[in-house]
Structure formats: structure tokens, C-alpha cells
Length: 289
Ligand code: PXL
Picture 1 (spheres, rainbow, N blue to C red):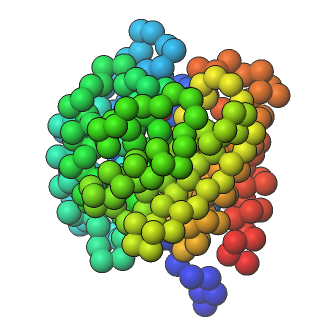
Picture 2 (tube, rainbow, N blue to C red):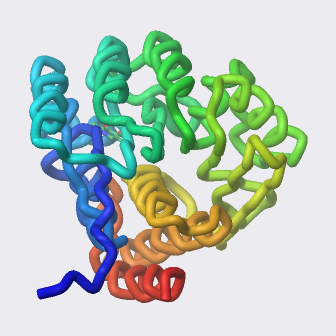
């Protein structure tokens, strides 16, 4: 049969595999696939659950396997339109990641670094300033970075603002982050006014700013940063314009939160993105129609 479709693009997703709790690879894999991009995975660690609101979780650090996986991939001749990294099991893994980037990133590869380390003003369990320093280094290799407000403040060395985020505050975060080297900075969980929450993006080359806001729901929703970053990475890899990618990734996140509220799913088990995927796929198809 003569091929009539363009070849599928491929992302290497480098993140932990938390078996239960719907975050990291267990959301990145379905969301990247639903965006029409192949998702190859390098797990940084295998955990029984994520580390928020669960106790007694198990963790197996996979540092020793990561580089051999990338070397094997390289030998197969596979190429990567995107490399997307998330949660690291240790700050030392950032060095392994730099070596993986050197192996897998070609001239056309989009690199997306989600500096997963903190939320709501504090570091996740077992993480500290050493992780922040490691991410500062890693971001020098990134085209796109996707911190939440807490992570952006830590990386920028600015105080975390728990309530409203003024445009002056967001500009200060962008100015500090652009110096670290990325081309696009997005910040998630931005609250410009009471009752409103959303995501913003800044193109460091043109100075253009973009935003997508939704009605806020109170409390913490685990895995939503991963959902957003995986969707944004896949949409940008497919060539979506930044504003469209921002909107589509934000709507997927918000729809998933709304569905969890409808199902009354206990927060620590993650958001119900599954039922939001059909509408998401329709939105993706419209972008590339
Ligand atoms: O969703 C972010 C995340 C990813 N991976 C692990 C986590 C968290 C947040 O708590 O614990 C293992």
C-alpha cells in the first residue's frame, strides 16, 4: 500500500511511573498518544503511588537503566521529534538527563523540561533546593519549560505568592526564567483574580504573552501539571501554534478536573482525564484539519 499519511512523530517521555494516582507516565502516555504522537518511555523510577497525600509508597530508582535505554534506542536508528522530561528520582538524574538529551536530541527535536518538584509553596516529599539547582542547569537545554507558580518562583529565586498573581509578578518570573535559556516559558496554576485560574505562556524570542483562564476549583488536583505539560509538548511537536496548544492543553486539564468533581473521585487518586479524551481528540483534530 502506498503511504498516504505523513510519518508519525515520536516523543521520548522521561518521567517516573507511579503505578496508582494518575500522574507522570500514566497520564503522559495516554495523552501523548491521544494527541497523535507516539510516546516512547524512559521511567526515572517506579513508585507504588505518587508522593502526595499517600504514605508508605515504594520507590525503585532506575538511574542505572536510563542511559542504557537511550543508547539502545540510538542503535535502533529511532529519531525523536520531542524529548519531554518530568519528575526525577534524584538531583543526580539531571546529569543523566543531560547525557540522554545529547544522545537523542537532533536539530529538529523540541525539548520540553517540566521542573516537577513543588506545588502550593512547598517541595514535594524528599525534595529540596538541590533539585531546584539541578533543574536550573537542565533548563539550559530546554526549548520549553512548564513550571507551576511555586516551581517558577523557586527557579527564579523569588518569593512564592500564594494568592493573586499580578502581571508585574508574572513578568518578574518570566524575566528570571528566560535568562536560564528556554525559548518558551509557560506557568501553570496562575491566579490573576479571585475565582479564576489558568495557564500563561511567554515567547522569549518575540516577547509575546498568551493566557488561557478557567473558573477556579478549590484544593489540590494531583497530576494536572503532568497532564498539561504532556499535552502541550505533544501539540507543539505536531506544530500547533503556541496559543492553540496552550488553550487545548488547558481545556483538557480543566475538563478532567470537572469530571473528577462530578465523580467525587478522592483527590489523591488523580483527575478523571479518561472521559475528557474524546473531546480533546476532537479539538486536536480541528487544529490539524
Ligand atoms: O504530578 C507530579 C508528581 C510526579 N511524580 C511523583 C510525584 C508527583 C507529585 O507529587 O510525587 C512521584
